[in-house]
Amino acid sequence: MGVLLARTFRVVLGILLCGVGGLGAIALMVVTIQQAWGWIFLVGPVSILVAVLLIRAGTKLLAA
Image (tube, rainbow, N blue to C red; front, side, top):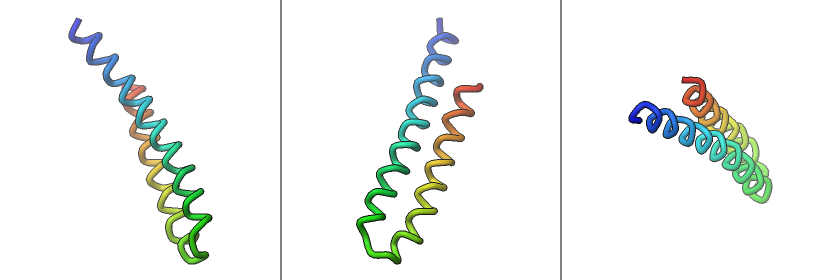
């Protein structure tokens, strides 16, 4: 029972990380577009990098 619970927790956490990473990137890019042009070049790549790292962490949890 404990193994099943741990596996379920990892799957749920992995899905949440992937979802937060994807939605966070979209939200940051939308906010960045509304800012001054200088912010687009600074925050855009950073938000994509953070999203990729979150999604990779989520997929590693799902694969474990």
